[in-house]
Image 1 (cartoon, one colour):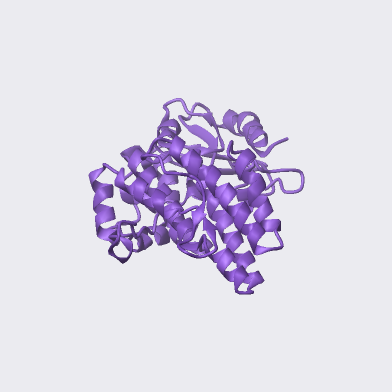
Image 2: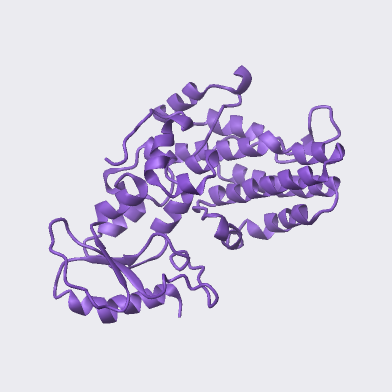
Length: 337
């Protein structure tokens, strides 16, 4: 039995009969492999038993649920989402809210299962978190391509200099960045590292981009790594063009300046995507951040999980919000609204 099925049976057979007409919504959201659908016989990750969340209207007296053979978290919908995001999406998501919200958290709030939601309290909030607004999406994609552009020549440069270990390390970093770009392209929230590969295999782009990414990691020579990386990057470049978010950019690999190195040239997508931004607030952010070395390529820290790779930050909404200034946003935006 899957974890979500177990949670639903627990709610329907053990919890709901004790509610005696108490108005509520019920779901299994938030942290847990079963919420993302990745639990299995080896790692059911049910926190050692069935669990469910009950969302009561504000001011409703909680029912007595003691003695149940499982875990029941009783809260309100607003409090639950604020505790995980630092904001209630029912009030609307600001630019700051979006950029300081890790995709792994957004994934767990929009996945899982809702068992009862008569007033739509959960549906409204989950719908509000379904995906970035169009110009914030452009910004996140541009920042993802910038991360590729910053290091795409390094596997070959390190390999040619005799640093095979360094070449392998940067290759792995680029594989991860390209995988995360695939999630952005397909409008899917990327989970945390444990399940990134599993979730990636479920993307449509995995059929084309997955094999060269695997080849890049398995390659024993830097030339083979270079070839595999540019093939994978070209697939994602063409898919980025297909989104229609910016004028098309040639997705073919090209020489890295005058050196005997082939790259995609991810910086070209950074310029195209940021130039297409129309939203005044996002344009103001781009203006504050400025261009790299004064040129047309933006200095984009991106979203919180493009700029930060610490579990201690990404799992703590207060720390995420305190990092707003690092992202070029107004400092100290507050933990909750």
